[in-house]
Every structure is written in structure tokens, then in C-alpha cells.
Length: 294
Ligand SMILES: C[S@@+](CC[C@H](N)C(=O)[O-])C[C@H]1O[C@@H](n2cnc3c(N)ncnc32)[C@H](O)[C@@H]1O
Image (cartoon, rainbow, N blue to C red; front, side):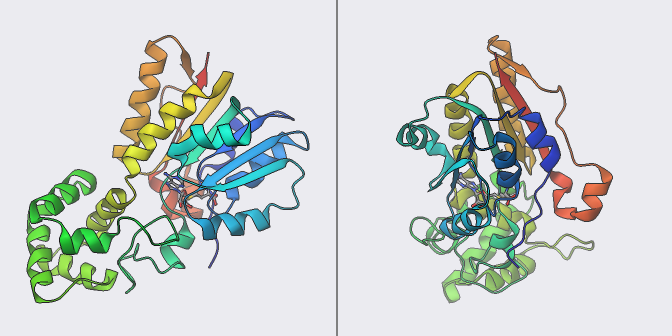
């Protein structure tokens, strides 16, 4: 289903303090859930510049938002290139930036790109719908065992990383690992039997996805460049979904505050309330942080 329930929708869009005529950059348009509210807030005289690495999602969002009157630019690009995107758009400074990182439900459940261990799909894990560049297939079939283990440990915080990497290498010596289903089974066979709700492949899949898309590198670059392009009084909101990402955002925001060039919207991250978690359990790990440029 091409549906994605936007996370912390009210908190993030209100926290950006948009006005009629504001210029807003959204790096992760996805299916346009947040974009709709942002566009409504900036009205007819506002400018919305939205990027997503996934062209298919971006096209869906563009179609869904066509009734909104603000000026809209949809650009298929990585938000880490925000400087070039804004330059091309002729908008040096923006009033607000929103990043809702990670992947959408559509990418998890509809686009056959191997993000889910619940399905048997080609092992790509790219946000890009084009299929070029690094894929998870390349990592598991071609990288050294130690490098695979380092990724699974570093980005997945998986305690059985070395065993899983060994299992992957043994399996690929038999035949190439082509699908998400095959990989999920290899992980399951490599770790001690666990009880509980979490699938044993969860952390490995998360780690590969982060590596394939260089998610942490993109986040670091995107927020640093984004902050430079904020107008005085401008705000940047970032919604992240795991501790590695949140740590990067928290640290960067703290640094800007210490330099005396920014104010934090709130000391603690804003998290979904019980009602939101009940309606959308996937929101449970979300953390929102907002910074205001002085
Ligand atoms: C959680 S979804 C966004 C959902 C959106 N807020 C909505 O309500 O529909 C994250 C989106 O960000 C995109 N994305 C993640 N990292 C990206 C990056 N570095 N550059 C561009 N797009 C990225 C993904 O392709 C995905 O579509």
C-alpha cells in the first residue's frame, strides 16, 4: 500500500514556526505526509523545495500535493546536496528545514528492494529507485568477512556480528546471496535461537541499509550544510529513528548552541505520545529535535 503515516506530524510542523510566505526545504519528502502540512502553512506566497533520493516516491508526492497553492520544486537528490539544490533553486537562505530520515512504509512494503526480512526480494536496500551504485548484494557477496562484521556491529549494534559475517561468507561460498529471504535465513542460522518478538535479522538489515545509503554520512553533511543555509531565526527539525542518528543530531545541535549561534527548541528530544504509538507502532523509536539559528 502506498501509504505512510507521518510521524510526529504536528510537533515537527508546528515547531518550525512557518508563516505565510516562508521558504522551506524538506529533504525527505517520501510520500508527502509532512509536505502537505508544510505547504498548507506557507500558503500561496510560500516556496517549498523538496528532495528525496527515491524518484518513485517523489512522483507520488508531487501528484498528491498538486492541489496546494504554494510554489513547489521537487528534486530527486540526496539531501546531503542541499547546497547545490538550493543554489539551483535560486534560494540561498531558507526559513525552515525538515528531515524525517530513514525509509518509508512504501519502501519497506511495496517497492521490491529487499529492505524487509519478511519478504523475498532482490537484495538492493537502496533509497534510490534507480538501482545504480552500491547495493546490499554487493556488500554480502563481495566484501571481506571482517568488513561485513564491522558494519553489522557498528551500524546494527549486533552482538553476534562476527558469527553472522562468518555465516554470510560460508553461505556465499556455496552460492551467491541474491535475496532478502536468503539473507534473513542465513542470519537466523548463524545466531543462537532467541525467543521474543524481534526477528534475529532486524539489526543486520538495519546495518546494511545504513551502509548502502551512507545514512550517517548523509545526515552529518545534510545538517551541517543545512544549518549554513538557514536564515537568522530559521529553524531545522530532524526526526530520527535510532540512537546512532539521534546522537549525531544531538551533538551537532549542542555544538552550535555552545558556539552561541543557535538556541535549542527543547532540551530533550520530543517523542511520540502513547496515542501515536498505538496508532502507528513504527513511530515508537522516533525522536524529534529542533534548532533555531540565532
Ligand atoms: C521516513 S520517509 C519520509 C516520509 C515522509 N515524511 C512522509 O510523511 O511521507 C524517509 C524518506 O527519506 C528518503 N531519504 C532518506 N535518506 C535520504 C537522503 N539522504 N537523501 C534524500 N532522501 C532520503 C527516503 O527515500 C524516504 O522516502
